[in-house]
Image (spheres, rainbow, N blue to C red):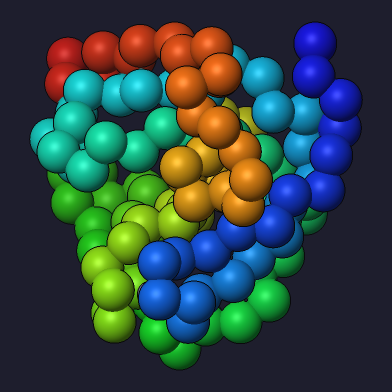
Length: 119
Ligand SMILES: [Zn+2]
């Protein structure tokens, strides 16, 4: 298992920056109409482990389907660093896009495929 680490990350242009403390294990590649197109590799963490450092006002919120997840993207560069939602128990959750973490080589990560298109 990977160590609990404090990661930094953000969008491409630098407007949106965050830090997240987590053990970066397998990441989720979902094939739903959103993730399948944008290619995000997701790591889910309790919202308490995530801190948005800057750029809240630069984020555009997009919702679809059941509208339970806030798909956020930078309105300048269009990158999707993270999404906000809820764990199954209703507690606040953040889905971090591992591709937006500083210094993380996503080719080294274990990927779990999730059939969100048929969930
Ligand atoms: Zn940006």
